[in-house]
Each structure stands twice: as structure tokens, then as C-alpha cells.
Length: 188
Image 1 (tube, rainbow, N blue to C red):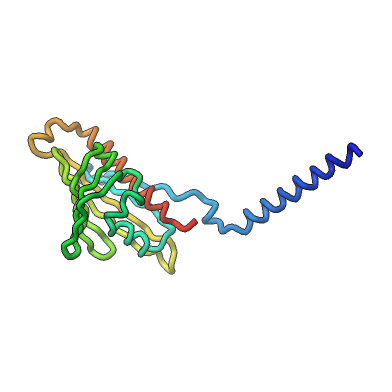
Image 2: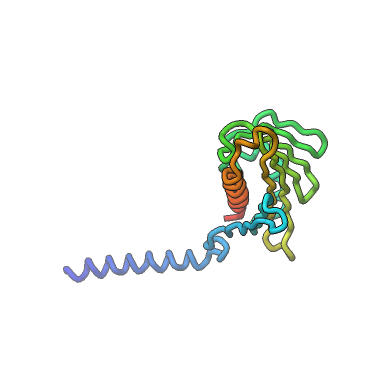
């Protein structure tokens, strides 16, 4: 009788293990692998530019729509806490965006839509900040490749009080965070 209880328990554990393994085996490998990490590098000819690239498993149209719709940015980018005053004039979109990386206060973001690329301008006291998001469809329906190039450099009188190290750290945090967050658009 005492052998019967451990055997029943062993059979239940074995059945649960077989069920779990068969469920995991049925999942596509993309669902099991972690999202890709962005590759980030400074331009040797102009170190004020930082280029980042990541593969996003979502369709290019899904990525483009997420970038194009500024009001959606708080749900797409963890760094963005709010978007206010969103306005559009043709292919130009402008909004006041509150970003944790940029100091938790509103900065005017202007986004010029060029189809598969967006030129980005950020109004920051003491610095010039502009960049480009580019979405490239992969061959034969493979994942989209997203590139985020961002220039940040001190400027003006206020720029004297902004350290280059601080600017570089914020720039890298922004590029890495935004590209990583776009990978969350990937199908599960």
C-alpha cells in the first residue's frame, strides 16, 4: 500500500512533465528566444552621433505605426511618461513629451514622417538633439530592422553647464531604451 502512493505521485509528475515538454516543443522557437539586443556604436568621424540597430520581429508597418503615433509613445516606450499637445501639420507631428532620461520634464518632440524613416528633433535647453528612426523590412518577410541614430551636443550659453559625459549617458540610455522597447512589439 505504501508503494502505491509514491507510484501514483510519480505517474502524475511524469504526466505533467510530458505535457509541459510537449507544450514547449509546440511553441515556435521565436517565442522562446529572448528579444534581440540593440547594437550601439559611436560614429568614428563624428562621436556626437550614436547609431543603434535592432531586429524587431513585428512587421515593419506595426513598427512604423508605433513610431508615427506620438500619443501611443507612453505605451511603447518605458521612458516616456506622458505626451501632451499632440498636433499634426502634413507629415510633421509635434508634441510635448515627458521623458525620464531627459530629466522628467516636457520637451517638444518634432517628428517628420518620410515613409520608412522619421526625422526627430528634440528641444533641449543647452543641447542640440536630433536623429532619425529608420525601419527597413527584412527580405522575404523576415523581421524588420530598426535603426535609431541620435546626435546630441552641447550648445549655447546653457551648454557650458552641461557636461559631455552627462549628455553621452543620456544619449546612450535613450537609444538603447527606445530600440529595446520596440522589440516588445514583436509577436509573442
